[in-house]
Image 1 (cartoon, helix red, strand yellow):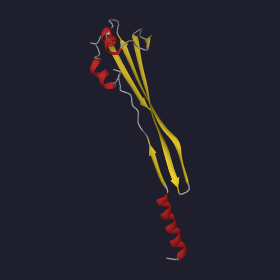
Image 2 (cartoon, one colour; image 1 turned 45 degrees about the vertical axis):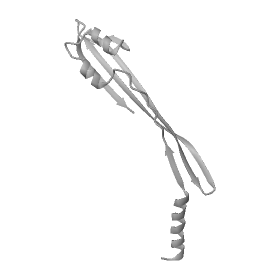
Image 3 (cartoon, helix red, strand yellow; image 1 turned 180 degrees about the vertical axis):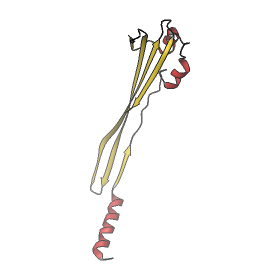
Image 4 (cartoon, one colour; image 1 turned 30 degrees about the vertical axis):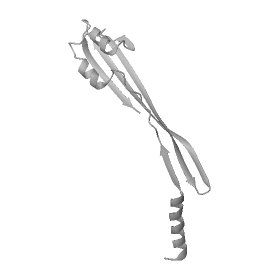
Length: 132
């Protein structure tokens, strides 16, 4: 191995020792207090059995009430959550040090649509979940 190549390899190796970096992301999460989860919905809602009063008791008032083409009443529930992680990415060199703020965010949505028949009993329901 010739001297310039060895010098270059040693310089790169030593610079790796002098450079350091770290990123910290303290995560802050809020406790889930909403009964609107896919598991809870599937345990609570039974087609042809669960009444409007039971839905109201378990999930509260809907966000939106509409009627479909068949004139059935449809209740819509929507829940969104937003989680952020903020941290610092820092690095240092022999004569220089610095840091920068970094963050990530996650948005989750949960939509529940319940259709009731003329007797105010659950006729059908659907769940849409998304995370981005």
